[in-house]
Length: 132
Image (tube, rainbow, N blue to C red; front, top):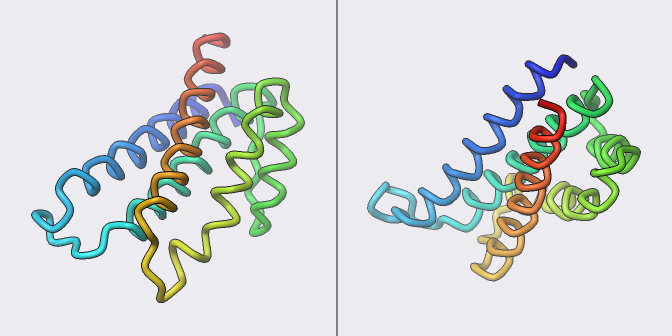
């Protein structure tokens, strides 16, 4: 993964996080009756994209397999990623809950996921500033 590709994944991470904020803000006005799962899903996508960008910038590679646990391990192998890996793990562990479950995500749970995604995106921004 090139630095240029890592920067594109960083743009994706910001876009997913911004979209989550828009869904939270507009909610029913945008035709989204239950926002929790949508926001949670976008938080998961933001976190994965941020991890990809960090690994791409630091290692020149990202995890591309079906096992998202590999992404946590790869992120953990980087100096900046060690502190961020638990946030990615929380997001990945919630993937089924947010994207495939018939249950509706509670506001508190949604907020936790957005916090984890925000932590990853902020960490990604620091990494990209240091390598640019």
